[in-house]
View 1 (cartoon, one colour):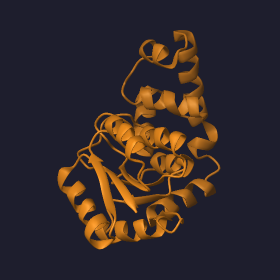
View 2 (tube, rainbow, N blue to C red):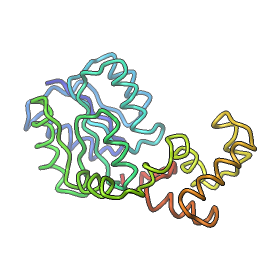
View 3 (cartoon, helix red, strand yellow):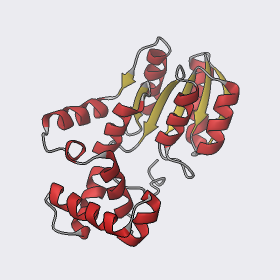
Length: 215
């Protein structure tokens, strides 16, 4: 098996490399801590499996996975992150990736098991993923069942404190449409104003801010 590692924490990247090479006998064909560089190198080296940190300094990990899978859909991607909030787990389910490892678990043992599993063509997700999915499936008012993808994107932008005037050009809409979006979202979520919308976004993981301090 040929592996590529995407992780900007050097020490953790070395640990993952050691697991791949010494314990599993994989050939590590490359490693980087940057998303854009990862996409170009992975498409060039064509590894069998990619280990991908979802929280990179320059690019959303889900965007990295999408770019890879659009060009090489057979690539097995195992994501890892310390963040297991509801929206991250929802995005994992929709991403097409082969596995997810929660960094707050016994990461070395869990990652080893995950790699062995996906190398056999199976999927591997840690307990936090399934717990989040169970909560989401049972909750008829879960926000992904109420808001559209466009509205979720709006909430992520609003979570940074951006005004409707600032959000409008990012989404390619008019300011009036942005104002309407905000009003409809607040109504759907039964929230009384933007401060509570921001608090909701943070609680549910609908944020765009860099979160590298925890991985």
